[in-house]
Image (cartoon, rainbow, N blue to C red; front, side):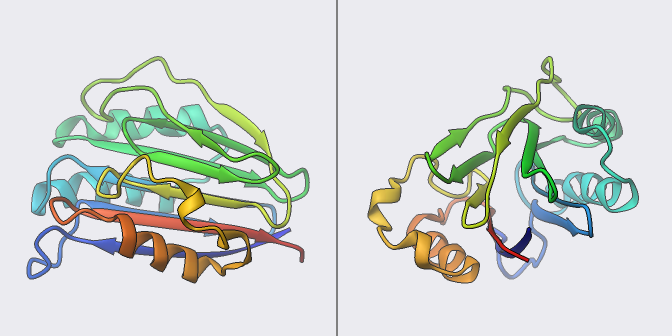
Length: 195
């Protein structure tokens, strides 16, 4: 199994160039791991918090998803905090494991479409009792993750041809339709396919 993935990040104040939202993707021979991170607020301090989480993910292999989120929580205690969703897909088994803190939304479009929520909290400030969730994914399935800068409860029926669209087309279409002008915004689409 392999994946096609695309994302868009938009800072609230585009002239500042620094977004509190950041995206992580690591695609290797065994796993695909990806994350949406949203530092609280916007601007430099939000970006600093999100960047610390991103740096941790880029420098450390995700072997246990709960431990990874816990370590990020501890790392962010010196910052204003962030919310984060993290997914790991085992390519050989098709197992998707996900965990997070706060209001990152993950949507899985497969045989049945479902919305995945994470426990309330803020990494670095308020850590809930973390729980991972597991799902089986297959080629053709689509995973969409987004921050609260994108309307949370949009109806996928408004995008009836989503299964035939590329990851870029999905990302671009949903961002144009549902991103908010009042916040940093980010959206990531991962579309699974055969090797």
